Length: 364
Ligand code: COI
Image 1 (cartoon, protein in one colour):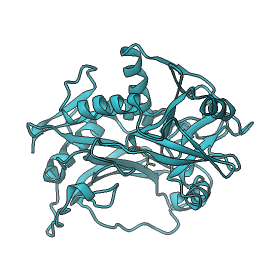
Image 2 (spheres, rainbow, N blue to C red; image 1 turned 60 degrees about the horizontal axis):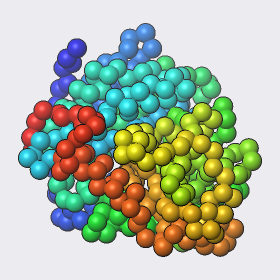
Image 3 (cartoon, protein in one colour; image 1 turned 180 degrees about the horizontal axis):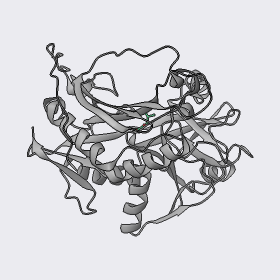
């Protein structure tokens, strides 16, 4: 079904960022945003594209007190011929469905979701960067804004999409990558079984900030979470999933505990490694096994994967106050190959041999 989405254009377009190599992550936002509303009994309505601007929210809105919300992270890419594409939006839709079910929120229908993204990006298409390692980050989010202090699902919701031209989440070098230091967190936990670890909700990140502050104190970029029960098995990194290369096996935490975010990049990496004939296992991996592998030289690489992080190699783990170097501390060959093919397909410089890209049907 095709919806009518009226556009109110900004009267004050913002200056574009001058230097695409300094975009960073979500420092700039485009001129417009998409908004729609939901009422129980009425469904989704009032679709609109309006200038990106602060909006009013009633102080007693449920989300400000009980955090009934979710968000997604996606990117749009400008190909060398100027055409614009998304990457596996069906996966974001599927994850959004799971999250909405967990949070008792209304589903966002696939047709309006895809139409809204396409039309919003077309309005702001001259914001899509074209420099190395850049893309247009898409942040859809949904929250309950009923005025209510009852701890019950809201009766009214807002869904919005905002856009940000971005570069690398962690600093990159000319080959697109550099290594980061990560802090192994064994005091606080991110998610327990039965909780919301598998859902993309703000509370998972808000609850992680105390741990990220510890990481920063130790000069680390982010946190490696261990499992909630035994504080023993590696789970994920603050913003991303984690992969470990030990001998010829690439290992990542399995999803069956319900404590791991099912990353779209995670899934893509597993499929690419399988296609390339590299052994990849979704299995429990203890921090002791990682440290033993580092000590005997069989730990070859660690890298993070995510929409924002793309492929981010880890050069050092900081655990119990000591630094553990990952192999030579440099970007490993598997991470580099994954980055080259994945970002290459996304940005259209490598042919999409996995059928993952989703053309939006217009050019910049
Ligand atoms: C993304 O990769 O899109 C995310 O949502 C991670 C974010 C918390 C930085």
